[in-house]
Amino acid sequence: MQSDDLYLALGDSTGVGVGAKSGGYPDRLLARLRSLRPAARLLNLCSSGATTLDVLQEQVPDALSVRPALITLGIGINDVSHDEIEEAFTNNLEEIAVRLSRLSAPVVISNIPDLACAPAVRALAPARFFERRIEVFNRHIEATAARHGFAYVDLFALSRQALGERPDYFSPDGFHPSDSGYEAWAEVLWPTVRGLFDRSEAAALSQ
Image 1 (tube, rainbow, N blue to C red):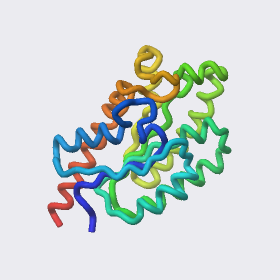
Image 2: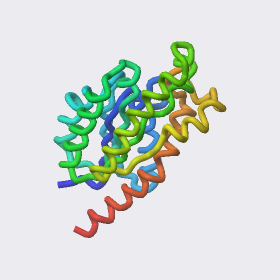
Image 3: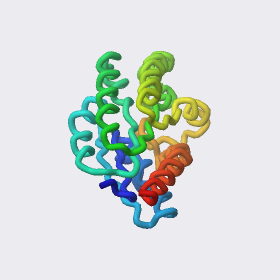
Image 4: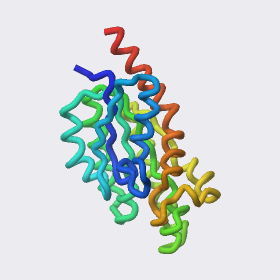
């Protein structure tokens, strides 16, 4: 039986909230969800350093044991930074999507932000090097979302517009978001998350 108040988050350190004092974007989305439904709760399976393979092998099995009303998936940053080959990334992502589809819950999948805007990344390699790889991986994320009917949020485009002008969005490590950065991240996801959560509640009430 599906729980009409459970939000399930899958992903990497941005889901954990590394770099911030008060959690990542899932915690901030939960606070917004509780303003609509006080009983909303979060099962956060995100882990620092996770790649698509880690999500597939370590997070998805636990995800399949619950019946959430909503799922968010934010993954790919570490696949890029670890120089994962494109085919492995796409295969892992597709298998994650296939398995999550079994839960019959709405899924919000976000693409990879523009890491070239991060101060720590700019010091390592030319911006265009990272941008090319991210753009290729993001095309696969968008295509996967379309194939499986997942809601897709384009963080890359929005990050390119905002990050270069907001150094306060980065934590002292120059890579992870700060509290204000995660807050902005959640704000971008919120309209899509709210719409799907509302529809999930309406569907549960009609059963």
